Length: 147
Image (cartoon, rainbow, N blue to C red; front, side):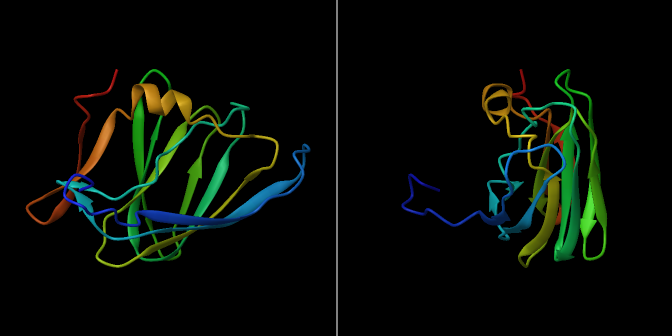
């Protein structure tokens, strides 16, 4: 896309951050635009929490998507995420959200303010699963680039 002169907005997020003190919650909204790069749907880059024993909650406000979760050993699972659906990210699991619909996906999130983010592990290893379109529907497939 970039080589072809296209630089689309993939997602944006708005967060109400609190002091990084145990007991506080950060919360906000992520908006993921519809679209694909090749066959892979637009998604957030995903992360683990720096304080690994912390969880996160997502709540679908509008649109349809899938939340992909994985452990550092590559165990994975996924959750449908649409209007009125809740996604729970257990401690020690990385997570990213994928828009599988034709309209924007709006998701509310909340997590402990002292949990922090670890994007580096995902940047280095990737996710073990990809969400791609096959015959007009989303399909979860192994990521051949996962290390």
